[in-house]
Image (cartoon, rainbow, N blue to C red; front, side, top):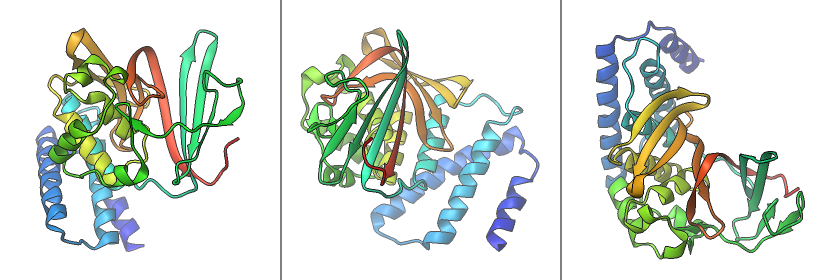
Length: 283
């Protein structure tokens, strides 16, 4: 109860000034940097108290920065806030990793789903090769840049941003499944895949957001339904558009379609992706 009262007292405080917001951003980035250093030294922190305090701090900073009186927030700031939030949002538990994709098709809203167990069994609904509406067993594994990647490999990815970037760059890949920017080493698409579709550990998702935050030219186009619309330029005059909810550490939708081969292709419209662990069987 004392923790709840403390949270309530924090949330009812007056909105901070622009100067205070700026200081909060600096403290957030400094906290993230020091937090990663502590993780790699192997120190253990008290779990409950620190998790509650950190989650409250992120919520207060996000609410403050996006208040009407606040100065415009950069795309980098949005992604750094999402990185801070991601560390404290567990994936949950369940038998199946459930992915739902929705987008606007020529005849209305279209949807695809898949269910994957930890031993690699997978079912899908509304894949192009299957009868519409039917659920079929599908042997397709998780893929990243065209190469198969399993739960163990995902859980073994480094939580340090620079090390994560190096590991992704060194993973096996299928060049034909990748867009030109990824083949040239920009790696934006696989980072978005780690954040949006794969059962990636919380600290690795946080690191992926941080790597994206360092992408040259990332811009914030402003608030839209579901979060902040970010623009990420790619080589060849291409541009990734995605809506990020920094408090939920979630990409609500993007104009990148992740293919069955584990690569990506640009879409003319937004694709929304939701993921969860569930015990509900494929249906």
